Length: 226
Ligand SMILES: [Zn+2]
Image (cartoon, rainbow, N blue to C red):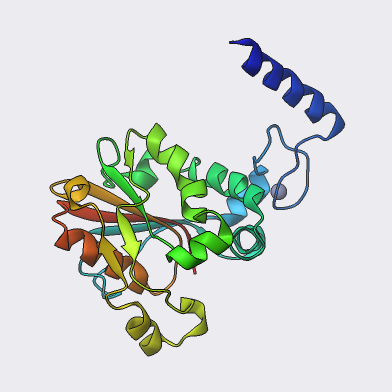
């Protein structure tokens, strides 16, 4: 431990005495910063494997989501996306790190390439970050994946999907993505990551662009399912 991390650990310990870490769900005292209490974790933890055939996602080989989209998870994601509350990413990243081997089985993590669903250039500039990167990048690297935050780009500024009905969502998103760096994608196993999966139309369009760039497989992992 160098003096910097020593000082950081000391500061963390001192802060914990004055401001004990609180569960982002219910405010009860927890053991570490960004950690959730067991009761809230049990409530929000709803891992699910989505039926990609039924959802019309032929280019997505596998699709998992870890939590429901309500209560504190919804509030934190909203803060992160619409109120520039960058710090709201930490408790969500903590949730991703809770996924166990069984829940991640078959996703081809180690040695694969992680690609986030991109924002449009305009929205990224407004927000200052891609929230998906804040939630997933560090964890993906810990799993032995290569993080490629700019391999996939959004061609145009699409309307927010939640404003539209199902048919409009499809039209809105068709052809919206392209691969910017096919040499990083070709023959690789890709893990596409996103914050929420609703209809799956966005993931399917991203996966299509990745397959067109020569991906060996495209699997998806989302924080929440709506
Ligand atoms: Zn709690």
